[in-house]
Length: 495
Image (tube, rainbow, N blue to C red; front, side, top):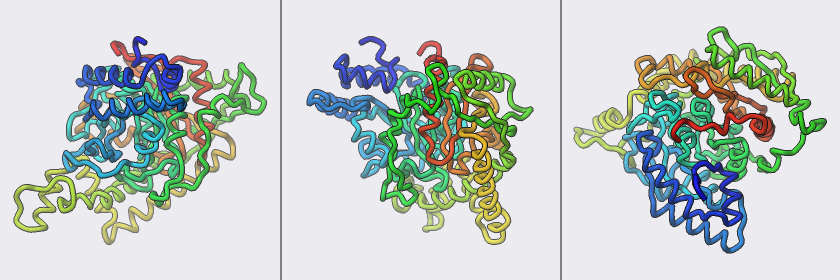
């Protein structure tokens, strides 16, 4: 088969199942493609021998009669997941060369399903960033326009999928790090409910917010991956004891009262007034409004709702997340693993020099903020108040879900910005998270799906948010939208 890189997860799975192509053939094709697109900076490492070994094992399973939609399909992992056979750096000099003795649960689950790991993907250092410019190794470039960011922190994952280097990738979302890069690069990504997917083996940034999820070309592809990634993990104390739904099978299941022409009939979609402020870029607003009109054609009803504390989500997040980061990153001290300063006079001097050399500016900035808000005399004034507001933000969502089934709006206020445009003003990048932070603080599932194009032809994503453990409803609505539109099938020029 020609143009194997143009096939998504579901399409590749069907081709492998039918014997039209082998996993080894697909893997070789994609590895060659990764090597020819190094300029994007999406991959931090690949291992040809390991990938071909996994592909051969998948081919043997298929030859023995085993059938699975993911068996033999290649993917790559964000370098925030530890992997036994590949180095794990979290995009930081602090972990340069580190190799884990075990696989993260997500890596193991997808491996058990027969997926082939091509390599590890670039990310903002310790997942801290909105543009993937904070990687210690190289910034990632957006394949739609290589002078622009791909979004972050899962920018390497997003760029690799958008450039057709891999059909799918894993990502993590703390404050929008799956949804925002998916929007900026024209792919589909879903952040599940907090606790739906195991965090075991995922290097922690902010433990009460971090959640793993799939990034792929379509809702169907994401559903197939989420089927494998979900489930209770006794090794993760935050893992939810929820039954694992069959997300992929439920995609085409008709809603009550739905018809062939209106598969979303009866679905109420809430539009928070706060998600459509006057400052929202006109090109983003236009694309999102057009997508909402398409959902109406498919039978959905649009309902005006309010999330009155949306603006507070930024200060709340940038108190809670740095506080948790300062605690989580205290383990990187040069004693047990990771970077250690070469010259020091005593233990305290080693700590100081190791952390000064190993961490980048953004990580240091968040550690400093987090340490400050947790310090004596400031804990009650900042951290405790932020936690109270976090509960109020979650309550706002529950009030909305009394009036609607899903919530919709933009993913980001603008399309992807230019590389270096916001480097000197970290607060400007923080403000770009305004529409993704509320769902993260509430622990709700949210996703981004390609919904149009804005300035200079750059992709615009539509954000859908559901109530707890309602990923199936999100994927169903996204799949219906993608059956009626082709935004998800569009490819950057040259890829």
